[in-house]
Length: 100
Image (cartoon, rainbow, N blue to C red):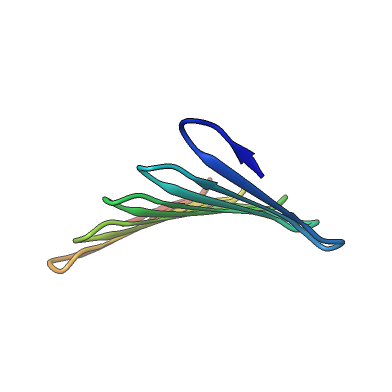
């Protein structure tokens, strides 16, 4: 446990993963580290962000009150998805083509 005037950090260690929890007055951040990937969860009063990192890709999920944004990045392509109550937007970019 680490305590500072600005945040509290809790560390959980097991043979299979490491988990860090950062707590401040403005946000909560969870860091989960198993052997093959990294997962971050960032929670604030305005949005939720999930980050998933592996050796093969990066995935970001942003959740706001009125829309959702997904970003998926691999060495071969980029995929973006925006979802709101009014529209859905899908963008797929690879070295060979662009899809909207």
